[in-house]
Amino acid sequence: MNAIAAIVIGMSIILAAVIFAFVGNLLQDTERDPNAGKIDRLTQQLAQQDSEIRGLRSELNTLKGQMADVGGRVMELEKAPPPEPAQTAPVINPQAIQQTEPSPLFTDQFGGMAPREEEGNLTEPMQLAKKRFNENVIRPTPAVLRQILGEPRSTYSTTCAPVTNPKLLHALETRDVGGIRLTMIRPALDSLQQIMARLKKEEPDIYAAIGTAGALCARYVRGSAKSVSSHAWGAAVDLTLKKNLDNMGDNSTQFGLVVLAEFFNEAGWYWGAGYSREDSMHFEVGEALLRKWAAEGKL
Image 1: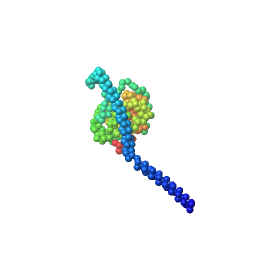
Image 2: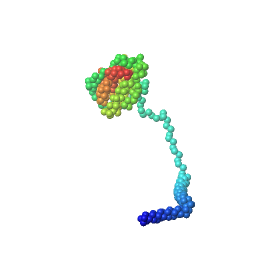
Image 3: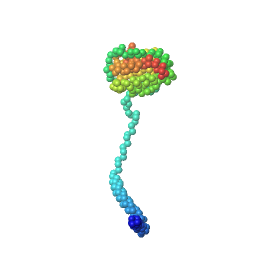
Image 4: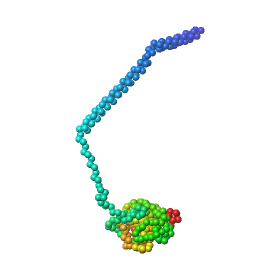
């Protein structure tokens, strides 16, 4: 019994202490000022507004300084002398300008142009070895060209004339190829473009020197009054080096044309140096290539 009594007395003491502490805290809460929280919040807001006011005053002072600088610059500009009026460029009469660029040799009916010639022989001639070239490449005769492409026009002369055959007109195209503008049958231009691309890569100096003396030209062969030139079908092109024409019929050629001939022969073109009357600047589509295009429906 004594042990139980001791436990009861101990628990009573602990409970009394807890109750005393709780009642003490409760009494403190009832004694606190109910407006204390509001006062704290107002104090914080006033401090924040005061900080913002100080920041605005600082910005205002900065703006005043900038305005003073602008005012000083305006006064300097007002005191400076006025600028001199700009001089207008003189009016030039186009008719008074001398033409320094000669006109091209000719322009075909579609705008294909041939460049001007330069005076003087800018390429070294060399003797031809005809047997080295045109191997397995046959020149298409006018009869073959008529069979595949039709008659370009009804009459011819020794000067260029427009093509009138509707079928041939449909097959012709004008295009810039390797820096020269040519009118030829469409697949010939495609082939020529491939040749020029290879030439530019492998022989850039010769590529840069290439010009033309014309492509499409419905006329007789030079020196003939009955044989129609392959130029009339847009199947041939005359090429120059450094705008210098190769002399026809002298059995010699510019060495750069020999290099060109190798590229054209490999692509199926015939080189005019193989004619009985040598024409080294002349390159035309070979018969086999022409028939191949016709079979493929490209003409």
